[in-house]
Image 1 (tube, rainbow, N blue to C red):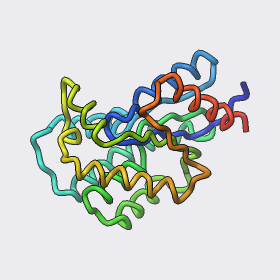
Image 2 (spheres, helix red, strand yellow):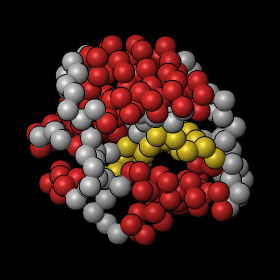
Image 3 (cartoon, rainbow, N blue to C red):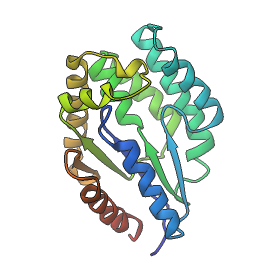
Image 4 (tube, one colour):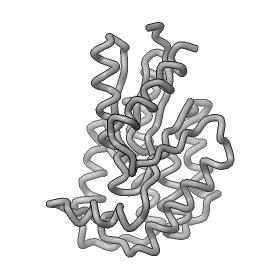
Length: 208
């Protein structure tokens, strides 16, 4: 398998399977000796993980929506400088959540102005771009059901159904604007079925 640097992101609402599929893909690539980097957002680098813990583990804290957004973007900046920029176009980068999540959750979900998010993202990313995104799609009722089975909940596991619907619709709007760089995966299907679909697409991406 020819190895090229490719930046791949998994997006989706809570319980959609993005974390499970992204981590499984990394394991599979490593077995095939494909140089890859795995990270999550918020988090990834040491300092970004500290911001993540502050944001998510303080489940009873209520931040202003703009404060919330700026904290996520601060974590992204640390993540980008330490975990993305050094390996961009050199290794396969697999990221669990990225810019689309900020737009879907903070803009479509919480109402933060998109132009603010886009401005800061451009400052952070420069010319670095995501090559491909897998959007894990799951019915919102099923998502809430999966969340309820979790032993520990963070702030983003406790929103109302209407919030998750806005976020889900946000993700779909984003993916529809550039269909050639997105694949919507039906998370209600069997894990093995979806993993095969994902891996076949990844092979095409890294063999270009």
